[in-house]
Length: 468
Image (cartoon, rainbow, N blue to C red; front, side, top):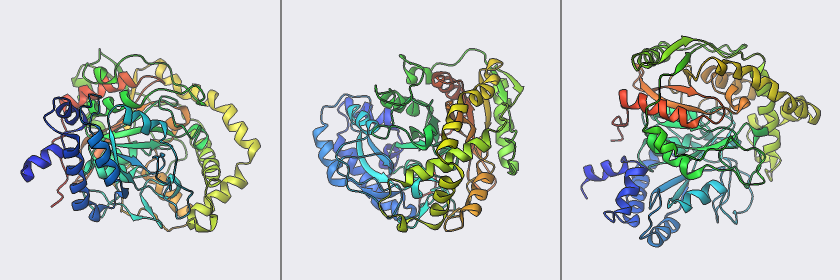
């Protein structure tokens, strides 16, 4: 196989690769070997992977000969907060427990669809911040510019997919951690409805703010992955509205005329400033939506105190996450500070009050969707910031840097709504721009339909970072 042919295969995407395997034009071992070579060649510059699973992946590939699943033979990277049998879940910390005895439900479903875990990707400690740098594993870098971050907390997954080291990867989003890395790296990232994808064996993370999903380079590949991983288990804390159709079919079926709200209004209390590049991406997308025949209106959700409530749930979630860390003395300074803040400022009674009040807060935000079908807005205030972000800074400094970078995302973790981040061109610095589409709970299929229409009108998958 020539170098050019290998590159084309590496960026072909999971749907195309699985089709080649099902038609016996490509063996799973050939795919695994291709991506292991790319990881060996590229990852020393990007640090996307905490560990590769070469022996396990090759053995799984040999066992997958003849597989006809929707992800037959497709290598996948797993974010380091999801259990892989035989591996430790470190959550980006220097202190972690023993190896897992069983796969997380999302990993089990991927394997059942034919996918082959090939490595575990880096995260910031306890998945707290929107950059991926930790004392345990160093700094993960953006393939479009290694001086910039791939985002966080699913930054390792995003860097791996954007660089063609894997066709797809798992991700999770507790305040933007699927959408932020997608936006930084020019990928598609669907944050599903709360309860759409089981988080088992973890029943609840960050008081239900966190949902599991995946990262891919195209809308249809993202939809294919959600088809493979969605579905609640009987003892899950949350369950999304039922869906019996095909997200992939939705992604290739244009929607009827929609009423779309367009807003770049910042939630109350935000001090972020939106860059000219991001404003331009937002305005071009609004124009394109109008040209596609949709009614675009200027509307914004009633956020109220959602930002304040999110921060309290976030801090309490960090405190609860840290309970599982064996040695707190090994935690980074900012993590220890946030753990202490969560314990002091959000005690058990306040925790219960926040959870009890969430339905009313959600209902106020959702009033907008009584008037419109979809909300379109930015993902980030700027293109990707410096690779280290505010790593090693105090918690107040890191929090301020985070909130100025990604003010648009946390409200929809509070409400549990689905939201998909989509590429929207490039900034003057050559880095990807992005917008997000937000829907009613359970409306992933509508979001995929509209996203697929945007992708067809404004293709992006042919753009790749220069890795020479």
